[in-house]
Figure 1 (spheres, rainbow, N blue to C red):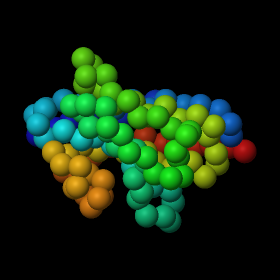
Figure 2 (tube, rainbow, N blue to C red):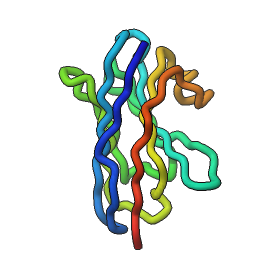
Figure 3 (cartoon, rainbow, N blue to C red):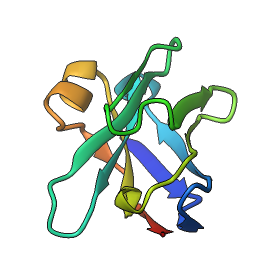
Length: 124
């Protein structure tokens, strides 16, 4: 089993920054890949960024490339999402996720483990 606990959401201004954190615990090989997803009201959940926990390979949605950065502190078992140049359209519930395979996490958007979510609201 894997447990994921997000923190760091809140409100920000357009053009500002926020940082999300996701602390992971549990079976390490079940979380080879971790990522962030988001869901805005009346929209489908979408992938934001993903990272391989064993290395530094990262993947980003086109909508956040150049603005968001995903990173991993392996000593703290924590994944971060640094969000810069925020836009009102970034407003959503953000979820941390983990899976043993990149395919299930990112390609299928069906990771085995999800956090409870943290709200991000960006005002113009």
